[in-house]
Length: 351
Image (cartoon, rainbow, N blue to C red; front, side, top):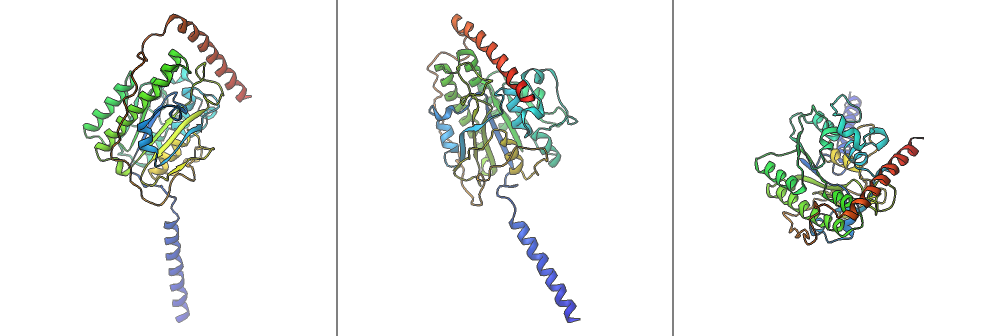
């Protein structure tokens, strides 16, 4: 009888130790956050390494970032925003700039967005997406998930809409934002123009404003704040595979985020894995998106309460102004190059 009791107690001890060990093995950062805010800046590339970006430096300087994370091979918006939000590569999700505007998706579609997985895990969660380029809300984020979709025709209006939304008492579990004027400046004035390099400074100001709006409502204490670009710009715009086009900033700030430069294998589509991980949602089996091993630690850290934003450098001509006639001719050639290059690169990857 004593032998039986001894064996039973040993089993209980083993199981207890196993439970403790299992709890201790929880991956750093998993489920540590109540909210995730993703700020996407279209066409930003790695330009925050080239221009003054005080908001970026204040928010992410003591946390984790890489200016030149990898993009999808086809450096076009739909292919990259699609991967950023679905965690799969562009050949798998199949989004293009054209088909996003034609068809909407619901939850019966393949390659769900991170909003779908968040809704499945948290049925009552507040989910919201603010976009300047409304194709994202139309063709990537599913229609039947109860995601609030807010489209604005300028980036400042996006920032104002976010501030109003938060002031109304909304507390989102997951929020996605897309700012478009950096890409617009490249398409209008050229990817190496002064106007293009002005646009990231303005974007930095808006990123700071959005951060401060979130922080002013006390949400940053338990939130993950992510900044990501879909692609960069070259002289002709984007769509090819130059270093400028294929580099995209990826930056993360939060209470358990390490102060580290992300590794060379960091990819902009890793945003989807990072967001779900932070909310404690298991990674979908089809994801090739991943959480960088160096991103999260066990030490609790303090995020900025607010940041001092820059002036945005509004000294050049307004970025929404019509370009001069000569630039319009150049734009026509660049658009043709962009279209042909994107088609050929996509076609070559399919064979």
